[in-house]
Length: 115
Image (cartoon, rainbow, N blue to C red; front, side, top):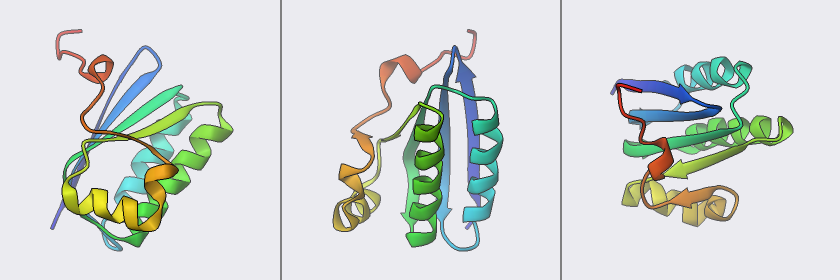
């Protein structure tokens, strides 16, 4: 399955929307997007995972790597709206205590297309 990644930035915040499956084959695409995004130096990133159907350990490692880089830059990286299967992975691995996990995308990140 294909992985779709789109990023919207506004006032030092970035929303990364991911759709599809994050696995060994698609994780490099996500890694590239985070590398590009973190060069811009946002102070807060929220990852919208509402359309992620599957995420394996490779995908979780990409997320952890991005979190580490954000913290090194003094920023925050949160996970939002994970589906039950992804939430279970976060819980089983203990990553739900490493990431700030929101039930839905925080309102301040729901930037209208016109702004």
